[in-house]
Length: 229
Image (tube, rainbow, N blue to C red; front, side, top):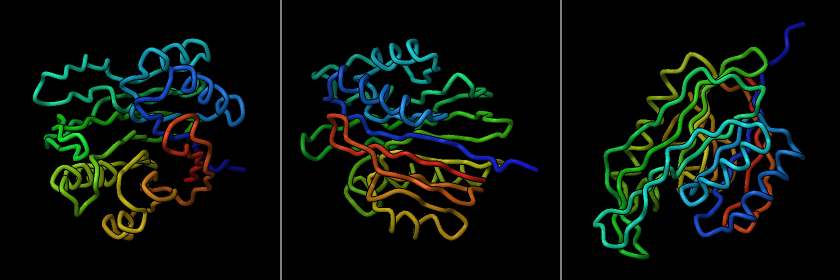
């Protein structure tokens, strides 16, 4: 009997201001409880060291750009390393890369301009089946807000990436837009799972069961997804 391909994935915006202890304990606890194939983390640029420590301790593989040193004097805030992917030891990495945007965007609260966002991507093989995963964290205020140009750029490139794939593909993270708006924008050939702005947009995925996890000292709940293809 042919086994139905599935992917167990946990996604979490860890919050840049969270403590290393919270991040380590939260992720280690979820790994122990759920044994996910993949973990995606956003606002990860302040947690590079603890994520590498976690990966080393648990026998996982970390995919993350080395974060740039942030300087208050610079005109543009550098978010390099904002998105990260952790792969369990049984997952085969076929290829990894970074999807780079071109649009600068603005954090209204602090009136600071940020460099274009970058998203970590991986082509993997799990239990004999291929998947593609993209860890995303879009600019703030949604498709119709003051950062619309940057948000729409991320959305268009995401949709193009999802369309190109011949295997089940998942773009997951804090997309800073409502699930309903995203579902309408992407259209009927795509499926959106999750709640509020922490969601997964998928292609060639038949179904997904998911659960909301704790916040782990941050300001976003984690999500535990099981995608089936």
